Image (cartoon, rainbow, N blue to C red; front, side, top):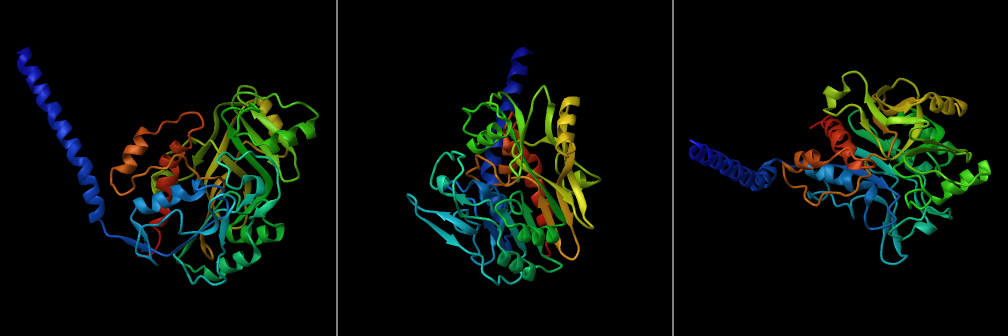
Length: 378
């Protein structure tokens, strides 16, 4: 009996292995059999210091995996070519591809990042975070006018964190805020898995600003969230003292989880800004800081609350979405997009590890974009 049972288990094992082997090549074949979805997309990214193209590469992976192709070329989107903004070359050389004054009425306009490039950032594999002169960046008046002329009742505008903040001029920000239905409070924040000054992820300007403002030496360690205001005010919330294990999580409202297929209550580990809704808008999701009593008091001292909008949608007069975070920024980006099992495999393998932006990408950003793009007319 034991031998027969062992043989049966072995045969079942071989069947499972065979199905897996067949499913991998089959997933490529099935992906290629699906019809292309031509789309006219205008993508803007002014923050591309290196050829990693980190700020928009995951966005284009999403488009390519979902079989959206560039309507102008009939080909998948290329992260090193199909956008407007800053293009790093070799050494300190670069090109800038400006947004034309007239772009017609594209299906999708996506402002990925307009923070820009500072001289110290150019062609550095590890950005030092030292303050230097702005080389190129900020959303321009003419760009906002171009986008307003391009909008109809059927296309979609998406903008992310940093498109309305510094170094964009206040007047320009107000115009874009009105279009998106948001108002920036002047506050920006970021989660850090390690606040030690030796961590290259912690910008030098943040440390310098804190030390000059407080008169104290930066001595933070461990997990924490840094807040910085456009006027230079800096304060730090540390894990255990000010925030609990929930850190900064995204909570979806109403039927948004069902509507977009996103996962609720996912911790967010990167840059974000604090905005307020403006006009008749729908708040799809909020950030919620897991604060202690001390943390709540610290936020109140600076005029902030522990809950504030993360994703805002507006449907009149145009369809717009504002992501109050660096959502398209994900590293590493998969090399394979042309397979139907790529997304479920990568999503399953991704873990909610400290500082891992991939988990948010697969559980929130990818399904959110899938749902938003499905709203485009066919």
